[in-house]
Amino acid sequence: MRRAALAGAAVTVGLAACGGGGSYATVVDKIKNTGTVVVGTKWDQPGLGLKMGSGEPQGFDADVARYLVNHLTGGSEVRIIWREAPSSTREALLQNGTVDMIVASYSITHARRPKVTFGGPYAIVPQDTMVRAGDTSIRRTSDLRGKRICLAEGSNSYRRIVDPPPDGKLDLPARLVNAANYSDCVRKLAADQLDAVSTENLILAGFAEQDPGRFRLLNEPISYENWAVGLKKGDTETCEAVNRAIARMWQDGTTTRLLRKWFGRTNLDLPSALPRPAGCP
Image 1 (cartoon, helix red, strand yellow):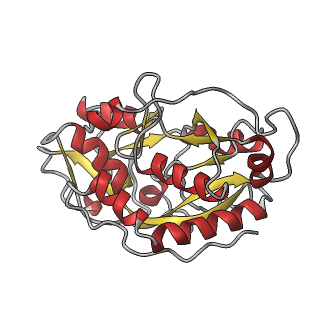
Image 2 (cartoon, rainbow, N blue to C red):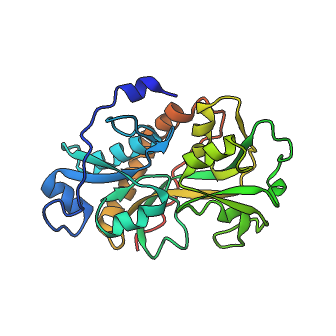
């Protein structure tokens, strides 16, 4: 793990409703008027969003959030209030105003589009599968037939294996094992309580790097997921501002630098180009 980076984190972490003491039509408007923004990230995903003690969450997604917020303010000082955004509560956190924006390996899906306005995507990431290093019974995704697959609460990744399109891909029969989140999935994989964890390869690589030699990735993409910034449904102004910030982040080399910073040692083929915006309906 990158303990040096984590040790240097220091931030005030608190709670705030989207209104922050007032009512604002957009996140951009709130930032301009209050100088604060509430950002939801994962707190249990190494390399993406991992929070240790009282420090800030650290990782690629957390750094992307910092860049985007800075762009939204035009470089003016802004206070980021960090909130944990588990997969199971992301839509609710946006809808009830607990967070203003979510940057948390949040894929655009057909099921989510009616509930969330997505800025971006900021990266397109392949979904892969991780198994125990010594499990020779699973070499390809087709070997997942009948296996115990992790179902992380609130995540759609398992659907790529067991469901048909549009949100599924392989339509394979499998035994689903419930877990609270992906760190719980990985714990159960290590304990032989399930056979495979399938989600975006950057998520899996972060966990694999924490425990070298214990797990391996199949390196056989199932789908390609569009990671985007979640906003309250209808916040078109902020969505368009986020899209401009994402374009700038790729153009000035920041995205490539951050990907190499957090995943340069994984030997993965990292995202290398600005994705086409999904639009801001």
